[in-house]
Image (cartoon, rainbow over all chains, first blue to last red; front, side, top):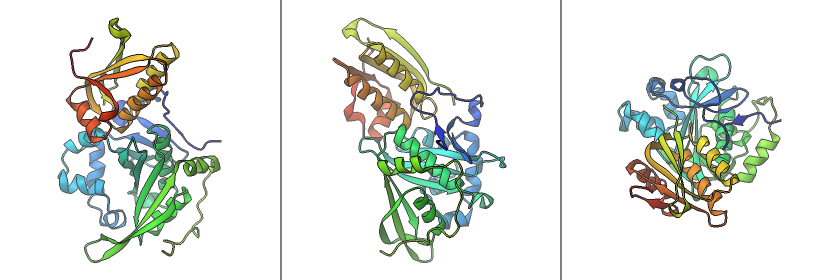
Length: 226
Length: 110
């Protein structure tokens, strides 16, 4: 049984009765669903960009751009919506939350070459370690493969972000290398760990998926030796 | 966010069928285009012009739908896909690096 479903190539544009101003649900899992951004989401982004914990753990160019390039301008929404090199979707928990728990996106999308980069940001501390990020990344990976025709995804993680590295591994990503001292947090340089996954490996994860995805806190332990 | 309107017109010139789209062609709306093109292929139509002059936004999902349409149509005997573009569409195709794979029409249409 598939744990997730997304709006496939032939699905109607509006699979549910949500008003358009609430965003269109693109993919739905057991714990979270992904929906398109709306102008009102900029209010959430405004709070997230000022969170020093997120800045340190993720170092998101997406959030950085909203704050420092666009100066939190409402025009950022249209820029994201019409950017042909990225798909940014809001992560909503299926139960228990009244606002988005984060954002997940594919960026630097190369449609002809079939690759893109993945970024998953869980912004609510209470939503961490619940499998939301893992499922959101899984959903957008399937979307990238099924709808965008991607065959490879990459992700970069700061060496100290063990939670993200373990999440990627749970989704079948493999550590492919280390960019030595490529990240700077304002005080010192850190290694960036590169992860990648290919289409057949994404398919393997989809076949392996169970309806219930229990988390094992002891799984994985940060980066592998180089 | 509004839905993409798709209007089909049959035209005689070169046997092309024109699909005219209006509004954003994005992750929220691209599935409709995919469905329409697949339906046309199933009906034996292989020569299509997608008129994007009234499209107001185009993201990666929209371009992926156009690429899929191109693949599906070119796989048919005598199949062809022509895009009638505007500045927004041209910019998106350039930025995505896909503009060279499409046959473009900038004229007044058919």
